Image 1: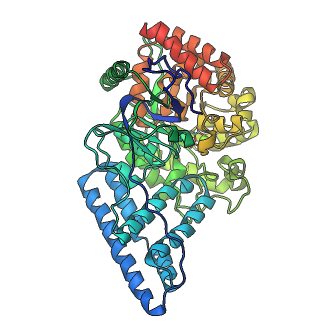
Image 2: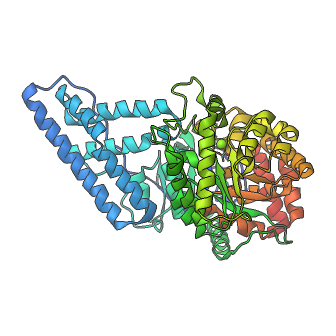
Image 3: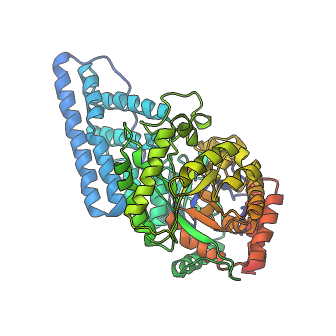
Length: 580
Ligand code: PEP
Ligand code: MG
């Protein structure tokens, strides 16, 4: 909701409170920026189907399409040459989509049926969009990529300017429905100082690239974004997830410089992580392959707290052999040869369909046969994965003093925990479970005695506690890990863990929020794992507080009536007790 009330984190002085508006979205990358809002260049108007063209005109339409698509692909490739790393990969992948044989075949079919090249592109892309949306989850988030290539090719066919980033030279805050990968990959952050999108989610391309660039970013603002006219000076607070208009420019400058000073502290922070009074909290990274693990190894992350193995096999139609799996896993172990690495067994299903493992069709996949539930139906497959993990660990030369930790996703009962732990221990692996189903948290006293460790998956724990789809932008206010209901489940788990002496980690996105990190530490969590780019911010923040502050923050957050109130109360506590 747009509101004229004070922003959540702190009071911002506004020039004219009647004119001041604050809209809120999902905070993705922290930092404060103040600049005029500018929208990305409009997408082309989409053509509608006309009457079929005469047969002799149809081949020329296909030729027009091929020429335009080739130009678009070449342009994207050329841009990929100008950048490096992930950005180059994203641009090459987008160029690859423009060259995709299946998509081009679909366009050819539409031109053969008498459609113009422009409409054939709309028609063919529409088929793919429907397919991706039906698959849901990560596939559905790629729909933005499809619309992007469609619009670029249509603009090229019409000789219109390429849709996307506006040509500006002065600093602006970029507003968009959702940014395409091709746009975000070449963003000049000196010009586009912050990103605000109507759509998207914490795992959309905009969010991934914004994290990589370290540019303040807020997604899923919804239609409230419309209340801010283009050209209005806005204050973007990437921690609070707010965009505010009517802010006094001097006050804005002060907040920006305060945020920059914090960024400098983060740059200078060196681990290992502990509070000011020496309470240790291990900071670990979430990765999906060897490449991400190598990137994490260059940060202050002390190890891997979550290796999402299912993401290695999103397109595998048959189960890779034990040796082939081991080869993939080994690359992650090699990035952290002597440190803690927590491997999660396949969390296939729901938003992460793995062709060889997931159920073909389910009415309600988030509540269906996903994660460990697939392994319950196919124990041999789980055993082969555990064999592969053990083999990879051995091949990577890990010694007995560096145990290999393995955990199961979506554990809901004590029986599942016991069964999984037995299979792990038979292979010399340290056995754990994710606590991401509310039942597992509530039954911690029955689950934990079977396990060597647990790791709380706050993304799913929040989704299931609040009965709100984690990928829905409309429900982002519910799927907020600051929800006191979620914190109470974590508290309960930690209380049981204290008795059973079981290490408790958190590996959901909550672990990336420096303020929430204090709360989790206060609740008794001993390791935090999130995107490696967030490690230094969390470490620098924990270094400023003591354990007493963390415990107070935990009490304050749990006593709050809702997520926003919890966040605001902890920020306020920090402002009064730490910033002073
Ligand atoms: C979680 O649910 O918090 C988690 C870490 O697992 P994933 O995001 O992969 O479902
Ligand atoms: Mg999960």
